Length: 83
Image 1 (cartoon, rainbow, N blue to C red):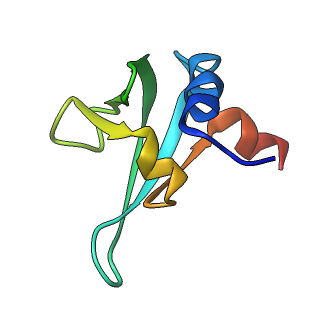
Image 2: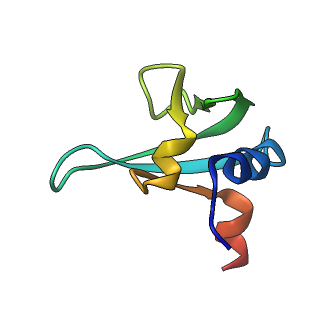
């Protein structure tokens, strides 16, 4: 079954308010890991409120296309514990 932007948004809509970890590619060999909470989903982007102990800014947004193209990966805390 092909993954679409609409299906990615539906999956994230069901997880609003849950804690997650975002892993983003920042260059050839540099990876940025951020922990936070999925706060809101919009038609084209979703917003992650970051953990203030680890990050200097409050929130960051990503597009659903970032997930589709695998520019970023997200893992919810409940998924980590189940593995």
